Picture 1: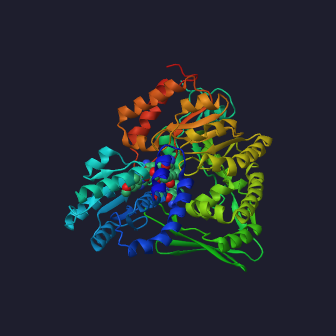
Picture 2: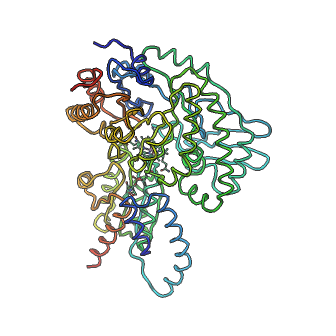
Picture 3: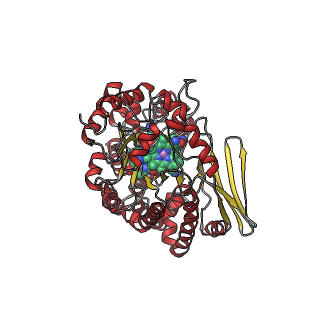
Length: 173
Length: 373
Ligand code: B1M
């Protein structure tokens, strides 16, 4: 897992590229398959629960998958809903697993507004103050995140994992 | 006063001659047209007239996946192809005596031909079946259809046929997807290489057909960039193939311009050394990371650059901001040799018409060639 942090930093600084991150993530997952039962046995808790997906009508998943991999690498339990995820699916899953973080990804200027709709739906469902919403994707900016009242914006997968860790620390304190 | 038609202007740049004005040729397709209420533009040709741009109509007469080429794929012997629609889903299958490979697509209101939800190749068994498909695949020219469309475009611009993608891009974009391509290259390097080589041979057959179309240029929709690939992968899996295809085009006196709409700054040395005649859809930040004027310094004067306007910016900026953006770009591109002002990939759905007019206005005011602003 510490290795994934190094990978994240290298990726952020253009020292390695998407294929390199994928290879590292596969190595991590192979290791985790062996370690997971032992970690559960010895009572090690996950860093937190994250529901993640690409918003409705958005089929881009490369970036979202990298974010999910980095979050897993940072010890989070990740529930990846895939792409083109309807608003109600995010709400349903967040409720069902008692999520700490809802992660939304959008790559299109035509789909990014779905993020605001999802935040409103979390509010309507009465769980907005229980979850932190993190948004990201190529057209998303800090300003846009604020505009739609998201809690956090992350520019890339490494930042997403750092933000998630900060969120967890805040919840814990 | 303009004294060239759009066709003459584009043809001049493609042939290394001087245009009267800098061509303005955004990549407009049905993604943008479907958001335009105006009844004035039922076709891309109509749009070029209404929005006053020099039309380079892409993918003429078609775009046959997974090769991404403007010709027809024909299955021979005991291989069959079928496409079945079930509500919003499309299942495309190659049925062979060795087994069936199937891709699943999902259609949306805006994207009728659908997007891949499941690729043809998911494991090594599928790769073997696809290899058999390739061995029994032939291509049919669509030259007459190309000529018909080109004639229809007339002086409004030019028709451009699409050339096949490099083998690795066919894996990434259509056949296997990014993650599995990376993993299968690690797990089954020999068999993957065999199929890459076979696709390369098939590509050469495609080039023979497409280079016979009466066009000054062919564009493969490479989409190669460090947005998804590494410079190493470019060097190992793209560069030599691209050089070979560029040579085939050169032999037929046709320009070979690769569409590369992602991040290119980390590939600039390889691109400078490459044999392609130019880069299409060069995209500045934030979707891309290369401004044409920075590229010009690295690539030299000879390579044609098509692009310069980030699509998301074109959609989001105000009219005045668009004008400033384009003015700044033209100033920095002076005198403007071998440059076609365009979008760094498709003009987005919902781009305000007034923003497109704003670009045309600046081009008309300041785009007289050679640029001297
Ligand atoms: C939860 O918290 C977080 C935090 C950070 C988060 C996050 C979530 N999600 C992402 N991040 C961040 O971290 C990641 C890793 O560091 C980063 O993720 P990214 O996703 O940004 O980066 C990835 C690592 C790599 N990036 C990518 O994979 C995207 C690359 C480009 C080339 C791209 C691809 C590959 C595809 N595309 Co599409 N595509 C383009 C892209 C062009 C480009 N230059 O970016 C873009 C995004 N596409 C575009 C378009 C228009 C389209 N695409 C479409 C389709 C496709 C493919 C299916 C062919 C394919 C996707 C395959 C797949 N499985 O994902 C269509 C839409 C489909 C749909 N409904 O979603 C279609 C509409 C094309 C058409 N005309 O039909 C453009 C959008 C323009 C706009 N105005 O919105 C585009 C910018 C291309 C362009 N230059 O015009 C960060 O953004």
